[in-house]
Image 1 (cartoon, rainbow, N blue to C red):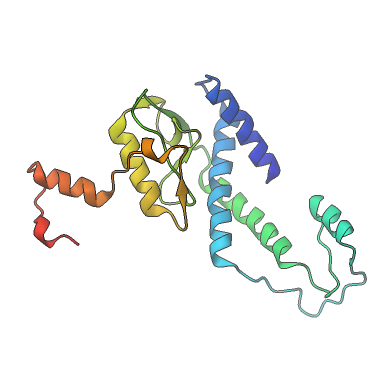
Image 2: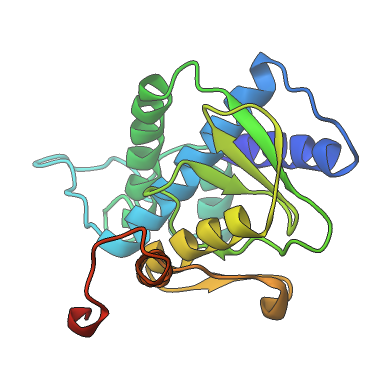
Length: 206
């Protein structure tokens, strides 16, 4: 997982520095990071407890915390002083398997670089990305699946930020909230109604 984070960070640094072309490895690094973000959020939400190996009696247990940390860093399973594999390690192993499945599901996904034009607002970051296939990279740049590179204006930034707000599980954040326009679905619906483009009675909206 650390390799995924490092690969994405290297790509992010290049894009912020001006790179606008991505190769196969770059697209894959974004996909991996997107999947990892969502799987981690799901794991935090579910707080699943994984069963131990039924009937197995470990021949050796690891009680020293520093040894446990070293084994965990190397990706090696161990039994602790309770003769159990710590649940957070089982959670990590399960997440790795889910990551492989998600990578296969999204195989071949290409990501476009969406860049907000000057003075057109900044992107918010949500704790959950699963309901929209986009990854905010910086206040002005967002990576969007199945699109080509493009510049976007205030309306797109506002719609994206609306999704970030409405889909967030626990939090969302931005560099400067005053510069992050938010166009929620309800707001968009009301504006279209006032313009006569949507048949919706504002008196009955919730």
